[in-house]
Image 1 (cartoon, rainbow, N blue to C red):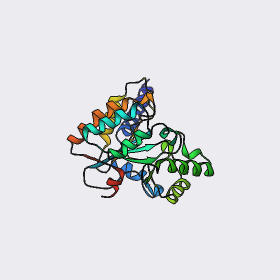
Image 2 (image 1 turned 180 degrees about the horizontal axis):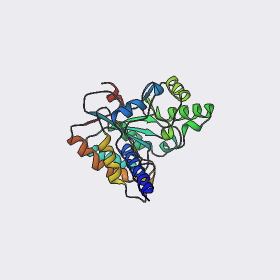
Image 3 (image 1 turned 90 degrees about the vertical axis):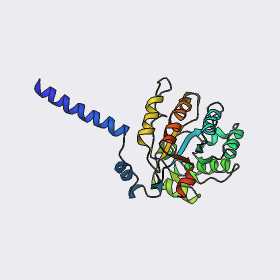
Image 4 (image 1 turned 30 degrees about the horizontal axis):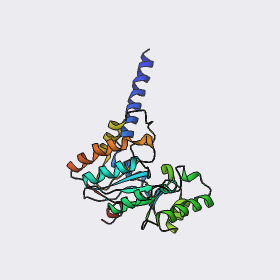
Length: 240
């Protein structure tokens, strides 16, 4: 019994430590993740200024995206939207509004799947087709792979097309949490706990089940602003 309690106690500590690490990843761990092994991929920007970039994936969506744009307009925040090519058709006016409101757009492939699983020729076809769609609205410099997984081949291909591959440093798992779960507090607290100067925050748009992003933005933007943070686009953040 004593041995069981000992191992149970040790296991509980390890489990709690794992949860803590998941929720609050220290800066040195983020720097290790974005070290030489991932050279050429942007995770965050080293700066002492309290500047951060908000990025939103998987749009545009005819119902969710207008609400996101309304919240951003209310608080005077600019963001970078990583758009899926298949979602642009029929939502062109939303993309035009993004540009008109001072936001920028990025390439997130044609559809929502793991880019790393695509064969090289299909990867090239999709990123190029999405590029042609998006450039109808203006310049596009940023690429984010589907599901965030990448390899050096993808980095090289994106660079050849004039793209910088960007992942991010604050990912609150909002795309993985089922819509039926009220996770607004978890997602919001995760963002607030992990945001540091130069952070790149990743949130998701894209379909009806992701309407919680509206409440998350309403929660985090005023608090981060009160903490002295200024929201800028990725291009503005990297220009520092």
